[in-house]
Image (tube, rainbow, N blue to C red; front, side):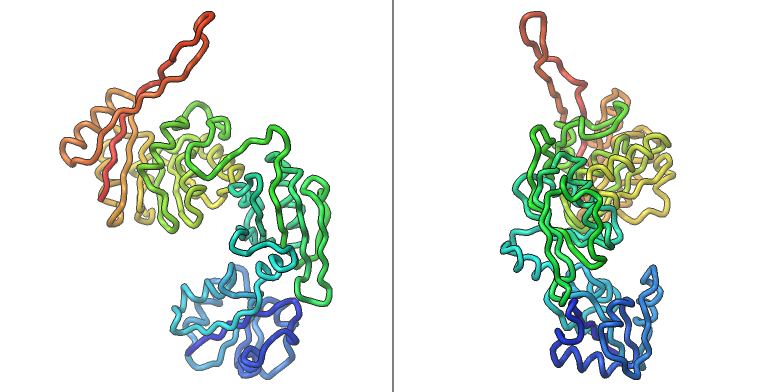
Length: 398
């Protein structure tokens, strides 16, 4: 049994080609949102609106083998759409997709923006803060949003980070008879509502003094809320280089402190996943705040002490141990949990932690190095070097 997914635009039935219309009319079961179902003519098909969450109905569709099923989706179903969800669940052999022009393509056409140079971000059912990693001067973004408050949420996030002068264009009902495009700036848009079906274009411009936060690891320490338990900027950059962030891969950040390693792993590799493990409840709350502020709210935070807190977690592709290194059996548990090709990086600043890493290096090999950083500071009427505590780092690749 093949499920056919038909992309529908704001122009509804009139915008569908013959293959798409035939798929809708032939269906025994028609699935879509209430808005999408209202765009196609009545037929003998049973109509089902998507529940929240979708998973139950997706499972039901996967088990169906005696009905002709057609699923309605917005625009291009494989671009941040339900088509991608069904493809993962059903596999390509059981899925037929008839795409419509995406809102991304239509918006780029209206704005005259080369589509390959525009970053598309989905803030549908997610905090608008997901746009934060892309807020750098000169970038062009398109944000899919959930409801009439989407444009206001995007404007708020930009303004809070010093990007109020950014050009903001709200594109409503693209391709339909009620299409409307309104241009503003993030600061001027304020809390205004838009049509329920809209997306937001942002041409990023900074106000004087706005912080510049890139996706390259090594954000300023001041970008984080922390109590001193943070892997410092230079060491953090070197640590992430050893961990090698990869889209789709999972990191365990053990003894996460402020969450900086996990957060920059996610910022560096869109589509990656991370779990931060931290025993202190105040730091757990702080990690969640940092993750939201820096645009990676999907970071999972586990409160507890490793290695016990690692029970039941999915196997990682990379592990960073920044705290709790001397806990009995922790290194062995982390190494055993790694997927093939995984990386383990551990940092130590104490003599005891250094001893653990020296023994691990002697027994298992890998790469052992000492990181020494010094900062220039005033010394009387002159300038001198003030060394930070040296960090011993062990890196093991599999």
